[in-house]
Image 1: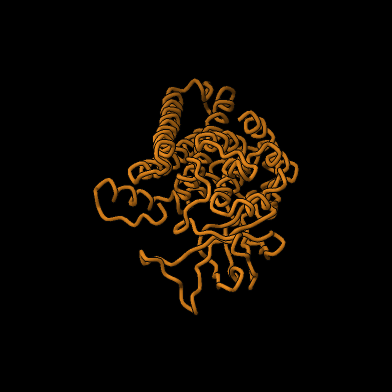
Image 2: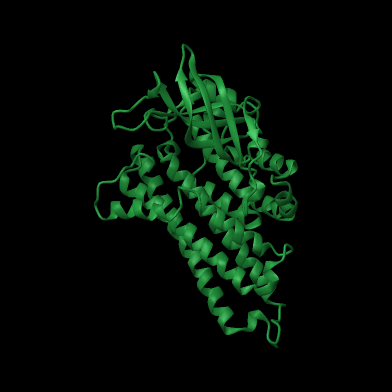
Length: 379
């Protein structure tokens, strides 16, 4: 946490340059790696931190208060480390042999994996591969091809496996020209017929994790949703801090009082602050309840999984709303490139587009709360 707070300040200083370059600076990535932030979810047996999920969200939130792009890349790389908990231990140790190894990629099953005698022949193209130019290994979700048709699981879903390969085996397509989170460098990545050994693949749907610690009882997609939500809360924290710094000296055109002296501003800031703190508290509560269950019996039941997703979606919405408030109250000063408020607004709205925290996820938890049949495959 000390490293996350320290590097948040560094990330904030480098953010304008990183946004122009559409990727984080090499010096910052090296510092993040050396601090262990990419290894938060990697098993201890493979040289990782195997951290409490609350540590993950707190570290990501602290970084996002400096720069959301740095926090986003940590969130993706850290949660990608969960796959190491499903791999044979020797394979996981080999992948994470170097202390600063960075692994990231895309969970979505945009690829095809055709079984062969030693593993899989993999082809596919995956968008949104955050931080891909800085990684040592990349992963991609694949539907297993069984004689030209998708292999199906007993529940009627396609058999989806995640495969890992060295970054140099991928083609990186420069596609990341976007309105926000520009410095994440979330380009498309592609494989064309690469052989991937079986020990570098796993299904998080049908394979039990090799590691038995409580972290690997957590739902993988739920944990990623928590990390994204933490980015949004961190953005809001930074935006409110930016506004407080601005409000003490800014006198709006035609006025005689500073922004901070205006009653309407005071009330809106107080409401936004309360909303962000409440969302953080709900997130921590949901994580704590799920962790207790995971420690007690090695699993996280559906009600607690629902609690995690509910808290993540709520935190995302609350964070974005608070960021919008800070931007709006900043007035004309907030629209300039020199103001971090405009970047925070853009970053927050891009974050909300992720499928794990998008508005449609309210429907998923709502169905469960109403007792309706619900597909829990990615829950």
